[in-house]
Length: 519
Ligand code: ADP
Ligand code: ZN
Image 1 (cartoon, rainbow, N blue to C red):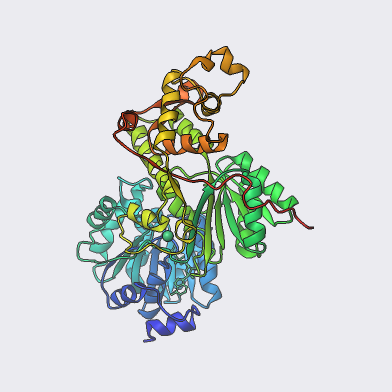
Image 2 (cartoon, rainbow, N blue to C red):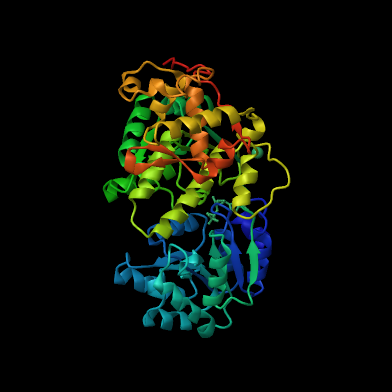
């Protein structure tokens, strides 16, 4: 029998295992069951591909991602692995050939869609074939608690009864405990060894900056740091992906838009160009990325803030799967918060659901606003403790100055209160700065005690104060009143003088000159 390490080197061309791949592979080769929890890009595929090659018989991979089977199988065939798939896209003639190959022992790996596996015909087929293992990919689909529940996955519990001698390996990137428990219970994996790999992606450098002129900021980032790299730029709206993609094309980049509104054929074409051509930049909504295996994505840029930390982690996780340095770069501003809150307010679902979403959004905002190590905070969200600051995020590399914003915050909260919690940030800043704008006089706001008390800060500094107060939950954006800011309960101690607040000092606008392109 060829050793696992030999297969890794000779077939896949890699030098060494990433922890805990080696242990997982040993376990399965020895015939044991395994539950593997590893973040996206961690290297789950090899955990079943290598045992499938090392053990006699064919490895059966159950995957719900039918659209990706062809790609996975082609990639395996290219390195000389005898792989095939069975799903609804095959005509019956081709399916019969695959079945024949399986019975003849001509296959190392067979990918099957879950709904197919539960058919009587497939079942009978597998009973007659020599099997190396069952790999249950995206195992969280068995959980009704999660978002991806698939009824067909429930049937997979039968594998254990029907094929007691075939080891099973269940894999997922979904972390939370409850889902894990459900996987173990429903797939009868109580005796399986569990492998939980860390969520840290040390080669990714996290940076979250203040949105000033997002397009120019993106352009500068690309020109300075990734002039010839493949990457993904995430935007919230379909229209924006197109605007940005075409604009980047004008700037000389090989950029393509991608969103669910595009024709399926166009999407498939763009996706394959992203995978196969060099230095393609995909400007996409969140519709893009699930299951995309491109190891050399050098950056993921966010022009709009994701709604949750999970989404941020998953999207940024598509960078640097090859382990080489990669950037997770984002710009965000008060408008993002307002837009996301608006979307939440307008979304369907119970009050309880909305509140939960609100909490998740707040956690994301917290990550944007922290002044300490971003990685520590990100991992903490997933229940992992990183002992030291990472040295590879913007907070670590370029520590943010903070300032005592207590006085400013009080003025900001008080102007919100005095104006009746009915105005948006621009007007509030005008009042604080003592502006002579027409709207001020229209509402007699020049008569307020807070009028003009904030001349010590400029408009951007005030905007920064308001943004941070919203992000930290002192102020709320009222969507029913066109983005008016309202006080939250939490601001009482601050107003009463019982609490102080440290704020981020945002880099001044215009800092870091905007480069003009020398074409
Ligand atoms: P996952 O399924 O966990 O998202 P993949 O199995 O697709 O991750 O692996 C992600 C990338 O890492 C792939 O490009 C893969 O070839 C690469 N990879 C996996 N294991 C290793 C390894 N031991 N050495 C080098 N590259 C690896
Ligand atoms: Zn750090």
